[in-house]
Length: 370
Ligand SMILES: Cc1ncc(COP(=O)(O)O)c(C=O)c1O
Image (cartoon, rainbow, N blue to C red):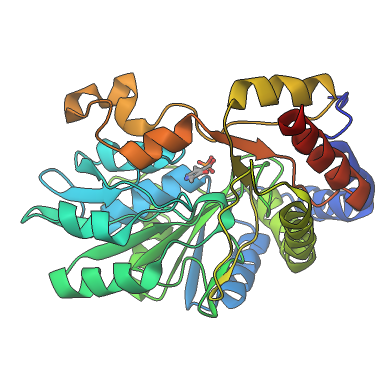
C-alpha cells in the first residue's frame, strides 16, 4: 500500500527497503526446509526472547490476544474470578478476561495513562484473583505498588506488555514482574512480525509447559491428548522474522526514544500535556500520545498538512456495548474518560527523521498559536 502521508504513522515500505535481503533469507530458510509449523526457528526465537527479557521461558504463540487468554487460563482464572484491569486499553485485554468467564473489574488510570495502584487497591474484593496492568504506550505501569498489593492479597499478576517490548521499570524489563508477561508482535508493534504473532514470558516452568501443550491441541508427543487444546502456534516464518528483528530492536527503540525526546523539547507545554518520563522508567514509545484540547480540530489540521495521527482509544472499554452487562456508566472512570476526549497519537516511528518530528511539532504549535 503506497503511503501518501507527508509524515506517516507507520512506514512498512521503508522497513521493507531496509530489510529486504534479511527477509528474503528468512523466507528462503523456511521454504527450503519446509518446516512451516513447529520449525527450529520457533525454539530459537523463544530462547532469544527469554534471554532478551531476562526470564527463564518464552512461549511463542499466534497472537498477543492468545498470550493473554491462554496464560490466564493456565493460571486457573475462570468463572467467579475478578481480574482488575484498566479501561483504556486495546479491547484484547478485557476481552481475554471475559472469554474465560471471569469478570473484568476496571480501575481508573493516572495522568500517564497507566493503571492507578490506589484505584486497584480500592477494587480488591474476596473474589479478586488477579491484576492485569497494561503497559500502555510503551510505558511500564507502576509495578512496585502493584506487586506489593498482589503479594499482600495473594493475587496473580498478568502483565499486558503487548505495547512495551524492551521497556524498563527500575532497571527490569516489562513482562518480567508478574506470573506472566504477554506480548504482541502484530505488524504495528515495535517488534513486528509479518502477520499475527505473540508470546508469553515467565519464570514458571509449569506455565510454559502448559502453554506449549495447549497451543498444539493439548497434545503431549504425537498421539496423546492431555487436555483439549487449540491451534495457537507461531508460524516458523514469523519466528524467523522476529529473531532477525529482535537483534535490531534496541536500535528501533532508541530511535523512537530519540523522536519522543525531540517532541518533548519542541511541543509547547502550555497547550500540550506529555506525561513526563520518571527516573525509574525507560519507555520505548510504542505510541507517542499527547493530551490536548480541541482534539478533533487538531487531528483535522494535521491531516491537512499530511500528518497521519490516530486515537488510542476513543471509546473506553467500560463504555463499549460489549461491556454493558458489567454495569458501568459514564462518569465511573473520570480520568480515563477525560483522556479519551483529549488523547491524540502523533507519529513516532523509527523511520522518521528529525525534520519530520520538527514538522509535526511546528504544525501542532501553530494550531494552538492560531
Ligand atoms: C494493549 C494490547 N493488548 C493486547 C493486544 C493484542 O495483541 P494481538 O493483536 O497480537 O492479538 C494489543 C494489540 O494491539 C494491545 O495493544
